[in-house]
Figure (cartoon, each protein chain N blue to C red):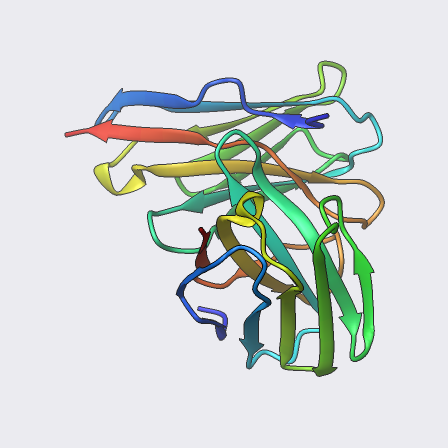
Length: 111
Length: 113
């Protein structure tokens, strides 16, 4: 049973606009969340993280929002750039244990 | 970039043959992981190691074994490969287990015919 879900397999956004990628989880014990970015034929690379004591974390163009009551997190990319085109995975862990990954969302930023 | 290499990068093998994938790191991180990536499933943990000779199972460990005789090397073995093990395999490393990010290798594409 998938504990971390990314219900949108793909997303297309115009360059300069905002990209919003969503992730839902079922395990209320998850307390640490990560987003990874993956280009074809490469391994995932870490993008941004958030712990459950926060509801927002920002790093440059990337902001992650956490809504614990809804068991939902989202990644905002503003402004979107063509180089952001990749597959994005969210991941969650509980109490320092293993990470569970979502199925990924493929983002295409159209120039 | 974290120093993680995987070998081979691509392999085609026949059903029933043993296969070993290697992960090598130069970061001296304690934790090492093997994941598989499949369409519709994302990344799933196969096994992980928390030190030399210390390993444990992940969520999809059946049909796989691992060994870690040195800090820098983590081997994944398919004792008798099956077509369901056709996948892309990623190795990852981290300093701690769940409280910080993992760094991933470039992946190994394995095809079992």
